[in-house]
Amino acid sequence: MAKDKAKKVRRPRAAPPKGFRDYFGAEVIERKEMLDRIAEVYHRYGFDPLETSAVETVEALGKFLPDVDRPNEGVFAWQDEDGEWLALRYDLTAPLARVAAQYRNDLPFPYRRYAMGPVWRNEKPGPGRYRQFYQCDADTVGAPSVAADAEICAMLAETLETLGIPRGDYVIRINNRKVLNGVMEAAGILDPADPGRHGKERGIVLRAIDKLDRLGAEGVRALLGEGRRDASGDFTEGARLSAEQADIIMGFVEARRADGARTLARLGELVGASATGAAGVAELETIAGLLDGLGFGADRVLIDPSVVRGLGYYTGPVYEAELTFEITDDKGRPRQFGSVAGGGRYDDLVKRFTGQEVPATGVSIGVDRLLAALRAKGRIGGSVEGPVVVTVMDRDRMGDYLEMARELRGAGIRAEVYLGNPKNFGNQLKYADRRRAPAAIIQGGDEHARGVVQVKDLVLGARLAESASLEEWKQQPAQFEVPRAELVDAVRRVLAGATRGGA
Image (cartoon, one colour):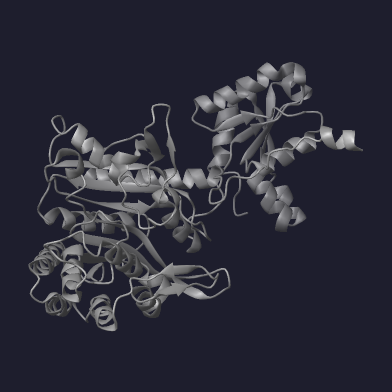
């Protein structure tokens, strides 16, 4: 018995790490189609593509993630053989800042680029919250005017509509970090003469406001005070502000009024004598005017002080795209889907490398969240059609079957030869069904001798099997014979639905 235990091999667990997942055919195809459509909009606006390494130095990435209390400051990091700390990128903006600094003498400025790809965050996973996810960014580096921010917001609205999200189903909310800084001055937790003082408290305030849609006003106020314990028992430390200080911050969060003009007036009251806050209010007024002139009214873009964005590198305007339609959660309760994109101005990020201020602004679309939203509304998620399957009736004629597949591919038709065990023909058709094949090609020895092939319309066959009467079955046979030379044309007719009539 002991000998048997010693020989027992521990096998690896067949599952991805916690917080990661696998993506299969239809999901990958849907994502690619979405990215292609987004790229078309970005390209029309004059943005060029850029691909950067998935790995950056920790020094280059900086410490800007909101969950800074987690191990490795929220990133997946390791030390290389030379002792340098490297990390997987946590977004696509920090790598852009490095590129803009590294190639500043070669790139045209303002530099307009878009980038798409996975990012990684060492954060606590949860339902729908993964440690690897896709982002799709567009940024303008070197443009100090807030006209660049207005253009990004307009482009984001056009992108959402291009993806099939009509007006009324989304809103882009805009705020300004300078306004928040002015409010924090008024609350006594930001001293322009000593910016480093109260840094911890400001970080907690920033993260608390950013969680307003998830925690509500009561939860945010708790984080402004002593802290908050969630349903799982985990405790999040608060900023320990006084009641008076918390009232000022909550006044800012709840400053939105019936229209943009009244909201801006209220923000002007809250920032008081702060020059930084007043500058932020003026920038918001300029952006609102530019967007209104372009036809982007409050039904698409509005001023909302509750938007702050969690990342620590934003310095001015910030914006967030929120889907306003209702979906049903796991417990059958209606809720709004929430944010799918966000961004803002980060004038100091490139400065970390060059020592010189380089203004920049941009937006990031959470591709996986946006895909989930479209699936929840039934706007995508239909089955993706598989390849035509050429069945194998005679192993000795594998070359003939491969030639059929080659002809179909040459005509632009997706096709494959069944390469499993061909002994059981029924299993070949089951395989074709699992592959969602629209058609199967059959040629046994008799068909080969007569120079014909059988084409089986699997879509029509499935429909007839479900509901057709015997007479309908006879009138619309799902399988028909054609000369071998007409294989491609016959398959094209099947793919076009010409063989299915009213089935």
